[in-house]
Length: 68
Image (cartoon, rainbow, N blue to C red; front, side, top):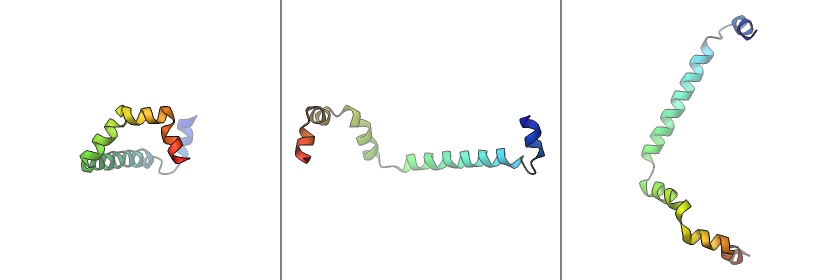
């Protein structure tokens, strides 16, 4: 059924090519951005889940009391 519908569309063979080009361009942009990113920022983001001091403050409600 789908094959018949797709065959009836004029110029349908271009859609897979366009989608592949969009995917490859997106992948290239993300890769370039990753390599150009500041290494200190990457290390800071990498350590966020392990930052016990900040987690203790959040869990104890200390941060909420300061902002209230």
